[in-house]
Figure (tube, helix red, strand yellow):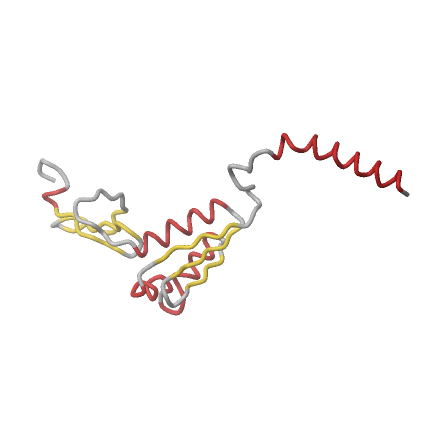
Length: 141
């Protein structure tokens, strides 16, 4: 029995020595199959906007990204996902819905409607702004 224990200890030591070089440093990235958790803090007055009427907005984000989203009363939003792309998209949507538009910043948007006096552009999800005809070009439009 004593010999078996000493032999086991010697073999375990050899296994650890072989494994040591590959375990010297932690991984720089998570495996694409590992679950992820992200936490975002939003203003308390934006919680209703994020949830939407009857939970429409939050259900839409969950359906699109495949993430699970929990919102606390203090504005803490926890996002759970197994998919890194879904997590990234959910964060992008949530930040876009709760972010404020700032004067002087450049935004990429989608033209929602065109009128005689300019175009309405969706700058962020649910946030349309007017681009006056005088700001569209330096020449007659």
